[in-house]
Image (cartoon, rainbow, N blue to C red; front, side):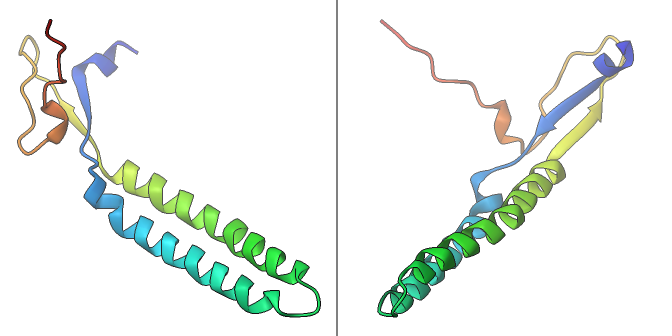
Length: 103
């Protein structure tokens, strides 16, 4: 377990990496709502609710899989030199300093 300190884990995920996935899922939700509105005029409106529920239920695992695999693809493991200090990885957004409160 002491070998884990010789490596540096960095997540380079940005909003732009998952933006397309969010747009596709929003389109899926919009289509399901349009289908529900189309079925609302039927004799049994419970079909409309079942359609929305089924589409959302079936699309959530795919959305979760896409998010997790995108996240795992953006985790970098960089070896650290013995006695060396940690230097920022070029192009990494996570190296920004947090906002500090001033009085």
